[in-house]
Length: 450
Image (cartoon, rainbow, N blue to C red; front, side, top):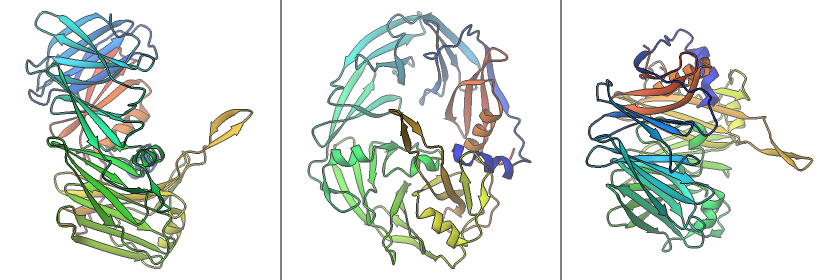
């Protein structure tokens, strides 16, 4: 997202940035330390919002109702977990929160439940074989905390589901399937994930291009996971994982064929459709396919001499932190894109689909005197496209998303610290500690112009 912030600042210079303050709470953090943590999160059943503050060896929990009025608070000492990082949360049937604290050194998790009724806590330790099951990602779903790990020596992912004081282990076995790298050479499942680590996509939110250029993506659905692999430029290997039966179904979707060999291709899953992009210096190819029937719903081929007629923004290039510049034509765009890791992102609001196409060169590192330094010469090229829900083109003016406005706000306000973002009802909440006013604040951000 930060790759396009400067362009948005120019494009939306008339955009009103004043935001609704939903709540503020006086909070004195005398000395901010590196391991201080603040997180806001929602109970998906009651729609209560909780704010957890960990600082100076103590914690404070603020409990807001669904109208965001402060209803209760709870404070105490971080006796069990002061030197740990907060992985996530869950809620019990009684509505009380449970937080999960991980130790990188000890490779275990302290599970702490907070009882608002009598202001007590109960802690348990969860040990899992972290040395042979490194953590891939974690997420919250249906008020449960989910921890996904990868087995180091076997072709398996292991999902731990924590809810109501219990943990369920679900083993996802990929041994029946075969895998190939970008050179079509046979590889193991673990080799593929080592070269292309899993990137989790946020459901119902805009996923920025720097995440979606990843070749291995995980999508969270009700009682399902979708895992897509795009390391092979000729096809997308998709796994539909049933979390109830643990059945895994494989589907392979050929990339739209180019006249010349493509250096890079990619895909994005959204609402039972697979969006695929394949590019060369001469062509831009884009397919939309139905996941169940595998039928091609839309197929577009643009040559370097054509105009991209479905774009709703200029063709843009941005180097490092400088302002984006417009590329003159499709040929220039494809010339730059051919040297980058390409990807696309699909996001839906109430009326339209927003699709971002582009590419990024991932940071490289230079070594001097035994030390590694990041190569700051970064480049991003991209354009935006707005479609209706029937997959038709629109000529609508590009409007800022809530995520864009949040990033602009944070960039313009140095007093913002410990920010976290949640989707709430039909808008987003930015929660942060204001170092100037010594308050914890929650601001409302919506898509479109204010």
